[in-house]
Length: 61
Image (cartoon, rainbow, N blue to C red; front, side, top):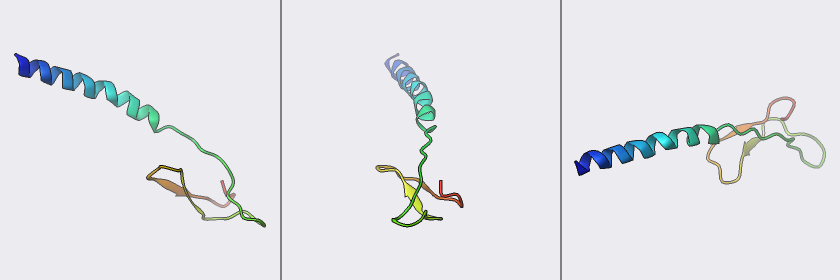
């Protein structure tokens, strides 16, 4: 009886956490990458504390 209750509690915690993870991944960050003179095409961009990133495209955003 106790094992099935523990399994049910773990399953409930897992299912409750799925929507939180999917909502946290929908973030849009916008801006322009430039130096003192011009915009930089192909610059690598990673948010502070992040593990994934992207590169700037031709319009540099």
